[in-house]
Image (cartoon, rainbow, N blue to C red; front, side, top):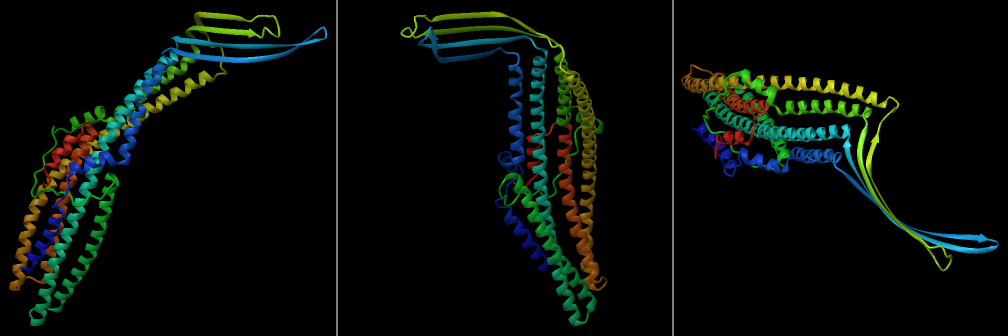
Length: 441
């Protein structure tokens, strides 16, 4: 009776913590606005979006305007007579250059579009990483809470068993060994409880680092929740999707295309450039008539034409840059293959983690029922004298360890389902909504 009361008090404590608990979806939305790593990725996407505009600028006309105003005082001596001439000039020039054929600029524009696409893929990957990081931190806190609650309930049961052993020793129905065994288990439970409290604080701080503020209570998983297997149920389908749709793979593919365009951009150093040029200049020069009789003048000049620039020799720099670009393209291809293989391996591991996790959950659910029955049988046997105290303590420990392992297996299975979708490139907030329905609301 006392054991049930102490266990109920532990459960009530955590229930009070969850009375105003936040769920996984709320924590994720807090992270969207406060996670520094996600904010960095959002800024990188905004910066990458400017690459198209910068690349297009090399294909559009450029207009420049210059203006000047000068004053020139001259002292002139003619036949021993010194005179002064003051000349004031002012003018402006407006010039326009429209590229007609600049292969390097065209390649740079193509690179700009690809670099913008890369920034979008990297941001999409950052969104998926945030979902995984938030979920992992959330379930780490729940697992730490489960461990602490289990240890506290175990300590309460051991406390009762210790008291029973002392009473039986006093009346002579048990030996001092039972008391020592129960005391040793109690001391160990106290040490484990302190470690669990410390671990829970660390897990909470890790979650706080993501969302930028304390979380308070978190909504736990519902009791006896049913987990679903991955769909489709073929591992090859998930691996194929990871090799093609994973955002890391997509970014690497785009990076390889950028490297290929870089080869062409550097080869353009051997090609001529053709520009349409136009300019309009105005100059007004005036002389101080009081000092010299020469009058000033006004001139206007308009130029329109096509300008051809042909590179002849650049000290072998262009050839060297082409070789460098080819080597970088090979590196980009190798990085792409590495990322593709890693994505496929991640999909395989996550898929196997889900399937084995589901089997493990079912086995541990059966083990929990068996452990509960074993504990009740050992308690009854201890009361009638056919079991000793150590048997009860072992049965208690087995039950609580089984419950901890069952909770962890459920969390790991859910996390592997998220990692599987992330590896396949189709993880979204809807998946968090689905998992959120499994929590106690």
